[in-house]
Image 1 (cartoon, rainbow, N blue to C red):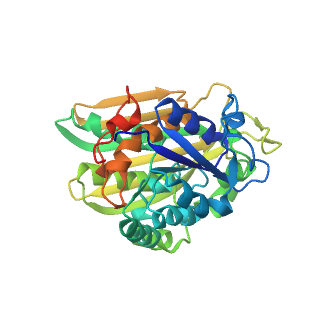
Image 2 (image 1 turned 45 degrees about the vertical axis):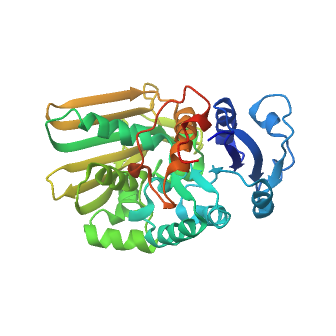
Length: 360
């Protein structure tokens, strides 16, 4: 590409502070920004990212269609919600305007196994609009290409086991309660673990109907199997409580969690494949004890056995950096909803991003 990549930012919250700055630092031209929050609308993006005014004010998201038609950007970065149902409108708007779009939405990384109808609809819209839609972020690399690249050093693999932990205290009361923090073990199994006995077919049916929202690892296992060329035979999820031997105070819940009660949970997704490789992955969300911290750990069992651990990852910054570095590949991908397992590995950009775009 012989000019700067024109970018719009959809969603101007915490993530956008890094997304907009990183996009400009990597040579992108930010031409517009949208948000639905009245407290953000009208603010200069320079104020949001902590620089001098840049002359671009946040526009009401209700006017996004009009602004996209005026500015004709190459890419829209969407940083709003976490499910495809919540993202459908923004993705569809981009597709109808022929704008490539990439989202921080966790489900968007591989939504074919959780929201197939929405994904098919968006795929058709993107093909008609001649643009590409996808999701990316921290899981794209740290649960994805990092793992598959390690697999490239293995002679044989029997099992891939992964886990990623986070402190529910950092994400508000709704998420803490959703993870069962503060419940007795009996309450946990009654309110949260009540789907644990379902078969692969039963849970798959509930997920596709939208009656059961799986953890992010549900989508990740689909991504990994697609990337590795594995054929899925079955996939289940179980929610298992975590406990601690002493009382723990939760400032988010404004309560003391008694020793032995649930501090949170692991959502464990197990995938069996025709190739004989089992994937067992888990998201661990709980109220941390004083000595606990975020950790990302993956082990490949086979010959040889290999483990990689990332302690205290800067998840927000890594998410935003991964997305910005994906932009040239997004532009170069064929039209449709193209998940990143179909793209080359993410690469560091030492030069302005437009120099990495090959298709224009």
